[in-house]
Length: 93
Image (cartoon, rainbow, N blue to C red; front, side):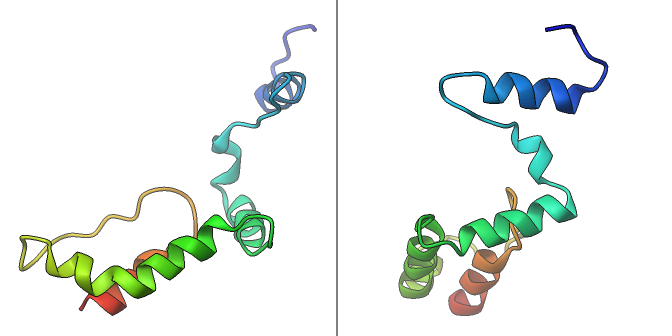
């Protein structure tokens, strides 16, 4: 394949040409990508967010009680809408 100046096209073609198909996560961090990811997280087939939220709802207070801090800064890491962080903080306080 001829090297293209279009990095996105090149990344997509390369990622989907492999046996284990993949796309770089850098393409999912804009507003549209974030909305798409939120829709994916709601799908029955993508069960991890539901399990994560269940753990957060059931264990946040216990987790927070084990933290050796009276104050802390919270940093949201990764893509998403921050709903799990909000849920944790609401239940941990």
